[in-house]
Image 1: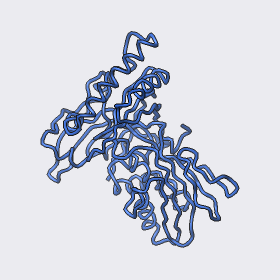
Image 2: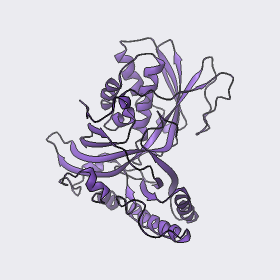
Image 3: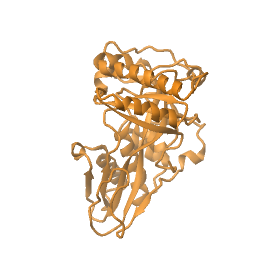
Length: 342
C-alpha cells in the first residue's frame, strides 16, 4: 500500500490531467513528435508524460524478499513523451507508437489501460492510443512509468470512471515502483521501496542532461555485489547541504566506462561555459556540485545557472562528434506537465 504522507495538501491529491482536444478538422499531428494520428471519426485527446530525475538515490538496506530500501528525491522536467487517446465503444485497446520496439501488448501503456478496464468491471469502453516517444529508453528518466501514469489519469477522466487519486496511485504501484509519483504529479521525497512519499517544494533550476547510447539493465545494477546497500538515512537538510549521492552510479560506471568519461566531459563543458559567461562565485546549487546520474542510469544531469549556460555547454558537447550521446536542456518542474502548463 502506498503511504502518501499527511503533509500532502488535499489539492495535490485531486488534480485533473490537462487534456488537449484534437478535432477531426485539425492536422492530426502530435506537435512534439510529429507523429501522424490514424484518421477515423472521433476526437483525439492529447496529454503529456514528463521525464523525472532522481536528485539523489541512496540504498539503505535490502529486504528478505530481495527488494531494496531506498531514499530518493524526485523532480519532473519540461521534457516529455506525448500521448493521444480516442475513446472506442467496443472494448478494444489499440496502441500505435512512433517506436516499433514499443509495439507490444506488454507495453506499460496497454497494461495500464487494461488495469483500468478491470477496475471498471469489464466495461465495453476501449481506446485507440497513440504514443509519441521523445524520451530515451533505459535512461533513468522514467519514461515508461510516466506513459503508464498519464494513461491511468487520462482514461480515468475520458472513461468517466471517477477513481480517486489515491485509487489511481494504488493501481499505479501494481504496474511499477515509479508509476505512483507520476500519478501524484508533484516533486516528492520517497522512502521504503519508493511507496512512502512526501511532497516537497524545490528550486526549479535549468539542467543539462546527457543521455549516452547505453541501455542500463536495472536488475543487473541491483544484483551487483558491488552495490552499496547500507547507506545511512538522511534528512532533506542533509541533501540541501550537499550530503548525498547516487549509490548506483559507481556500479553503472564500472559496467559502462563511457558514462564516467561523459561525466568528465560535462564538467569541462560546464566550467568552460561558466568562464565564457563570466559566472563566478557559488555553484548554482550546493546540493548538486557535479554532474550526477539519475536512477540506475544511463542519463547524467547537471544543474546550471540558467538556460543560456546550459545551452552553451550542450553546444560545446555536441561539437565533439566522438561523443555518442544526446544532449538536452530542460527546466525542473515541481508539478508534472501532465497537470500544469510546462
